[in-house]
Image (cartoon, rainbow, N blue to C red; front, side):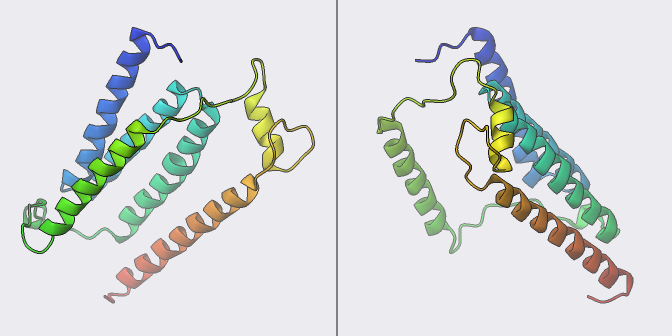
Amino acid sequence: MIETSMYDLLVFSFFAGVTILSSAGVVLVKDVWHSALLLGVALLSIAVHYVILSAEFIAAMQVLVYVGGVLILISFAIMLIRRKLDPTAMTSPGLNLGPHLARGVGAIIFFILFSSILLNTPFALPIGFQDGALITKSIGYAMLDLPGASIPSEGFLAAFEIIDIALVAALVAAVMLARRDMAGEN
């Protein structure tokens, strides 16, 4: 069993609260720019959770890919295609008890069922790396499929290239939308 101190619990609780509040702010704030900034706060606080779990490499990837890539693309798109919107004309999210009620209740039942199964399933202890292992170096070697990796290569490089293609596609789409908006087309 992994021992945790009161300090670890307080740090986790603080950043869990930051993640939940900033994620709620993403959907509740009326201004798109503020929503994007709150998304950045949520993504950074998730990176802190990875650091708490001693997964520094995943935390670095979270910051580089999501905060450094996706959030910058979102900000770029907002700046390119943002129209002068009247903030008073925007509406807040509301509860619609129409045809979506059954789906919402079904989703809650599914969540409760899935959570109870997950909490009652005995999992084996993770093996992890040996003490003193160079985790980041090993992941780097495995990513490039070089000899010297203490973990087997699982196509990490292909995953990063796919993410790169997705980010370039999002950038091209933002430019296309901006050009269409400048030309006055809808």
